[in-house]
Amino acid sequence: QVQLVESGGGLVQAGGSLRLSCAASGSIFSINAMGWYRQAPGKQRELVARITTYGSTNYADSVKGRFTISRDNAKNTVYLQMNSLKPEDTAVYYCNGEKIIVTTKLDYWGQGTQVTVSS
Image 1 (cartoon, rainbow, N blue to C red):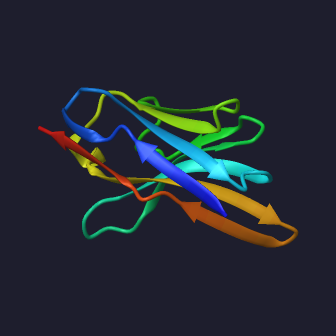
Image 2 (spheres, rainbow, N blue to C red):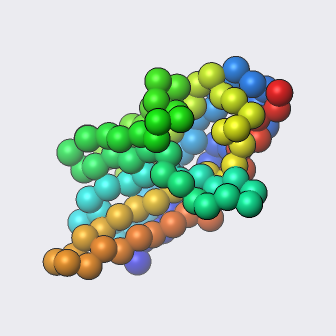
C-alpha cells in the first residue's frame, strides 16, 4: 500500500501563489509517476500536472506557465508550485501515485486539499 498526504492548500487572492506538498510513504518502490489532479464542484477530476521517476513532466494547458511540479526523491515528496492563481483554479487538489506492475496500472490517492482563489 501507498499512503499520500497532501498539505499546503488554503485561501488566496487572485494573482497569488500557493505551494502544495505530497508526502508518500509505504510501498513506494516501483511508483513510476506522481501527479496532481483537481476536482471543482460539478466537474470531473482532471489532471493538473504529472512527473515521472525520470523527471519528465506534463501539464494541463490551463496551468502551463503558471504551475510547476517538482519532486524531492530523498524526501519522497512531490510539490506543486502554483503562481498567478485564478478563481477558476478553485478546486480540491488530489495527489496521485501511479504504479505499473507488468500490465496492471495501480492508482493511489491522497485525501485532497482545498484550494480557493478569490477574485
